[in-house]
Image (cartoon, rainbow, N blue to C red; front, top):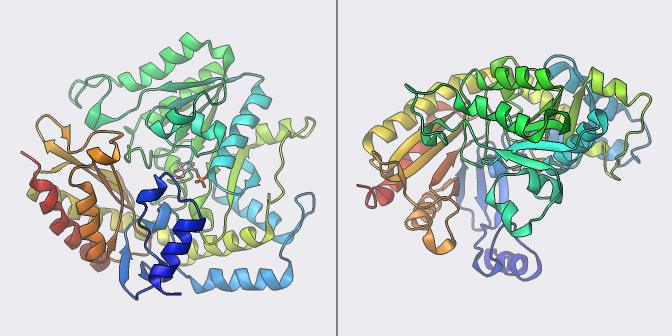
Length: 442
Ligand SMILES: Cc1ncc(COP(=O)(O)O)c(C=O)c1O
C-alpha cells in the first residue's frame, strides 16, 4: 500500500482518538528506530513525543524485540488464574524498583484501567467512597478514569461515576490562589486539607494525583507538595495514589516521579514506559498493608488479559534496558541540556511565556503577552480558536520534528536515550517554528 492508501483505509474504517473524524490528518508510520521514525514515503522524523509519551527506551530496541519473540515461541497466553514465570518475575522486579513497602501488583492493559482498579481497591480497603483528584489532570478515558480526570475531555461525557471531588493545582505560573513565588504560603496545600474537611475525611478513600502532571501542562509541584500530601493523608487515614502512568519509568530521571521527593504512596498506577509501548500493559502496585487486606477479603476485580505473558516478557526486557543503559542517570544529565536549550529559546522568543519540566519531560507555554501571561490560544481552545498553532505544528512536521502540541503548549518529551546533539537538532526546528508564534506576541 502506498501512503495515501494507508491513510484512506485508516480514515474510512477506523476511529481516531479525541478528534472530529473529518479533520484528522495522520502520518502513515512505516518503521522506527531509536529516537527516529519514518513515514510510508520514507521521510524521517525526530520523535520529540516518544509517540504518546511512552516509548521511553526508544523505538525497536533489539533486546525487547527478542524477548517478545522468545515468549511467543514459549507461551503466548495464559488465563489470569494461572501462574506464569514472567508474571512472577515482573511482579518481583516491580516490588524492587517501587519505593518503600509497595509490593504486590495487579496487572491491567493500560493506564485507565490501572486507575479504575486503584479507585476500586481504595474503596474496598477503606470502606469510604470519595476520591479526590486535581482539575489539571488526566487519568484515562474509561468512565471512572475520565470522571477522575479534571481535563475538560471529562465534560462531554458527564455525569460519570459518583464520588469524585476535584481540587485546584500547585500551578506556580498560573497560581489559582493569585500568588507569586514571593507571596506563596502553599495555599495549594492548605486547600487540599480544607476540601478534605468540607467533604468529611471519614468519607474520603483516596487522593489520586499524577506524580508530575503530564498532558495538562507539565506541572511540577513545589518540593514540599508531595511530602505534605503524604502527611495530610496519614492524618485522616486517606490512601495516597500516585498516577505515574506518564511520569514513571525514567521520564523524570527516577523510576517514579515521587522518588524525587522521597515519598512512598499507598499505591502507584503505571503503564506506558513499563513496556515502552511495545505491548499493552498497565499495573497498580499496592503497599504490603493493602496486599494483606486481600489475604482474607475478596479481590473484586479481573480482566481476561490481566498479566498477559507477552506483555510481562516485554516489560521484564524493558526494565533491563533502563538498567543496562543507565537511562535514569542519562536522563538526569540530559535534564540540564534540555533546560538550558529551552531557557535559550525563552530568552530569544517573546512568545515563550514559561518553560517547565524535569528529566526529559518538558513544555513550552506560549503567550501573547509575557507580562500579562495571556495565553497565545485559550485553554481548551476549540479547533477554530487555535490561531497559529496548526501552522507551527505543520512547520515542525515539514522539518522532520514530531512533537505533541495542545492548545498553547509544545511538549518536549523525547525517548530517554536521546543525545545532546539530537536535543539540539530538535530545538533548532522549534527555534524556527517559534518565529510563527512570535508574530502573534507583543
Ligand atoms: C497520567 C495518565 N494517567 C492515565 C493515562 C491513561 O492511560 P491509557 O491511555 O493507557 O489508558 C494517561 C494517558 O495518557 C496518563 O497520562
